[in-house]
Amino acid sequence: MSCVNVNNSLTEWFYTLNGCRQGDVTSPTAFSIVINDLIKELKYTGIGVDVDNAIVCALAYADDIALIADSPENLQKLLTVTYNWCNKWRFMINPSKSNVVHYRNPPKVQTNFIFTLGAGGPQIQITDSYKYLGVFLDQYLTFQKTTDVLSNAAGRALGGMINKYKSMGEMGYRTYSKLFDSLVCPVMDYGSSIWGGKSYDSLNSVFNRAQRFFTGVHRLCPIDGFTGDMAWPSNRIRWKLEALRLLNRLVKTDKDRLVYKIFRWDMTCHENSNKSNFAARVKQILCETNLKPLYKNVNVVNIDHVKECLIDTWESEWKTAVTNKSKLKLYKSIKHKFEVEKYLLLNIDKYEKSLLSQLRYGILPLRTETGRYVNERPEERICTLCNTNNIENAEHFLFDCPMYDNYRLEFMHKAQNCINDWEKLSQSECLEQLFEVMPRALGKYVKEIYLYHRSQIYK
Ligand SMILES: [Zn+2]
Image (cartoon, rainbow, N blue to C red; front, side, top):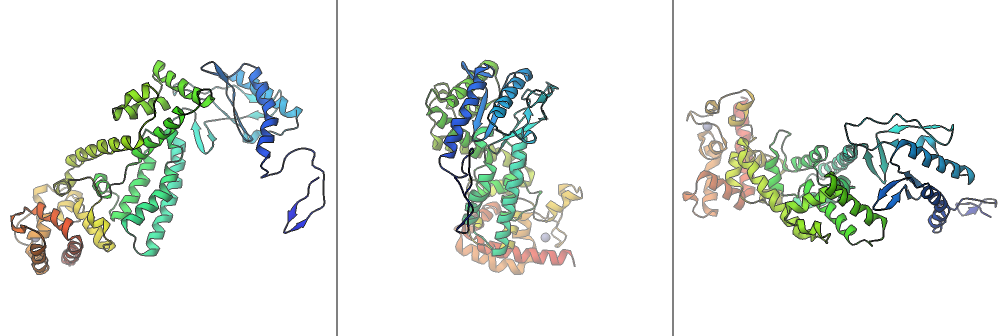
């Protein structure tokens, strides 16, 4: 007998002859006992995919069942068995929530077989992907759809975080990084242990947007600039580590379990036919970090060690990228270590922080930069505010242009007192020291002369 409890009052008692209570601890076990008969019947057909001599025909998770077969005809047989079993035990299948996906390699066309729920029953549609435990498994297993959905969700999470920042007025680097790690990364990384290893543009753009917002730069800013100053581990590094964490779990799994067998089968498939599967991605990561023997011997991987190796590789890739970008000429001469930059760690006024970033990444609207937009040759980009006939680049703007002499005098005096051997340093060395020793004062100085610059340009 059952009844329902609503606001501490009980309804009339009624008979329950089948089904189980929602939320009851025994429900999953009871359901497993019942559904076990169906799985037995499905297995009895001998249909399925051969995984190391174990035939896998169905994956069941609570009331969610996925049938697996190696041909459309065989899949139809499994469907018929399922339908008949459900009829016998008065289970209902929702045909609109059931779909067929044809997994294959790209040149192959999708099957035109018509699947039905039992003989003469409703037709089941063929779709291009199937969502299993929150991950879209698309027909070519590219994970494009999963990462697109995740990037939309991550974009919304980042939007919420940015709104929080704006309503608070300001936020430090550590708080911002922590919020990003705990609000946005878990969304971006969902299921990355399975699809990680590759790079996905849609997710990378969320990652870059977060860094652009904090450094205060626009969309055309060279990515390698703020990447080096924020020093956040890249998406790819996080995803690769997730894949290795899954590898470690699999390696430690009991050898008799199906999941372990599938893992070893996946490895064999890669060795025999060079499939680009989970094993291939894991092997690639371990090769990159000189740990290939671990893959061969199926051993546990030291995640911290791999992380260090991945960061080292990434750092040297970043260095090469910075060297090859013409906009980052100044940046290259003042940035030597891949680590968070001091001016980002201090709670510098948002506008000043943005100007400092723009200055570093070569995108402050001085004539060296604005000349690009109107196709001026580099030697034509002369400072229009003074008559020295010098090119208006960051060095001229900060150290030489006589237009800002009034502001400069006091600032340079201060610099001379705070920085050792100021006179002996080159201009780029001076700038590097200013960012290192007195970023706050530099921010104020740049703001003053930049506002003056604008007032003169737009006079
Ligand atoms: Zn000038």
